[in-house]
Length: 283
Image (tube, rainbow, N blue to C red):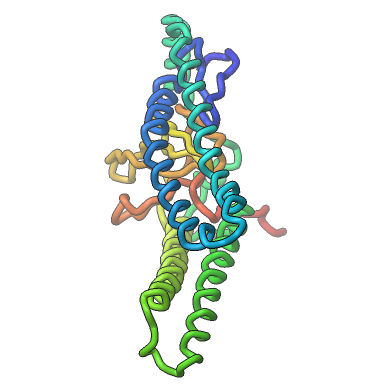
C-alpha cells in the first residue's frame, strides 16, 4: 500500500488513494449487510419467545420488554453504521493508476514479517512452547463458561431427580437441560483436542513462511487467506485467523504444518501457543 492515511470502516481498513483492501472491504460490508436482517429476525424471535415465557405474565412486563429491546436497538445501530461506511466507500474516487500499481509492486516485492516471528521460522523440531497471554485468557474463559453452564444444568437436574429419586418424572425441560449440559462437556472435549493438535503441530511440525493474499475483517478477529509451500514445493492456499489484527496483505507469517498431511496446519497468528526462542548457549 502507499503511505496515504487509511480509511476505517469499523474493524476494516482500506486506502482510497491506491485501492489497498478497498474491494475486500466493500465485499465484507455487503456481506454483513445481507446477514444483518437474518440476525435481526433470529434475535427478534428469541426475544419474543423469552418475553412470552416469562415477561408477559408479570406486572412489570413493559419493563422487561424495554430491556429486551436493547439487542434489537444495537443491531439497528450497527446496520446504520455499516450502510454509512459502505456509502462513504462507494463515493470515494477511483484509485490513482500509477499509485495503485506502485503499491501493488511494493507489496509483491517485500513480504514483510514481524521480528517476533523470525525465531519461529528458524526453529527446528522439537520446539519449546508456552501459552501466549491471549491463549491463557481464551482457554480459561472457555473453561469457566462451559463448566459454569454445565454445572448449573447439573444442579437443576440433581434437584429434579432428588424430588422423586427417579428419572421417570423427567419431562422435556429436564431432558433438554441434560442435552445442553452434555453439549457443553462435548465442546470442552473438542476444545481440548484442538489445543492438543495445535501443540503437536507447533512442537513437531514443519514451518514455512506464508504470504497473506487476502484479509477479511470481523469484530473479534480477522480471517486471512494465505499461501505457503511445503517441503516438496507444492503450494497450499488456506484460511486462518489473525488474532493479532496487525497483519496486512503482502506480509508473511509462519505456518506450522504436518509433513505427511500439509492440510493439517495452523498459522502462528492464529495459535494459542507461541514458540520460545532458544536462549544463549551456556558457558
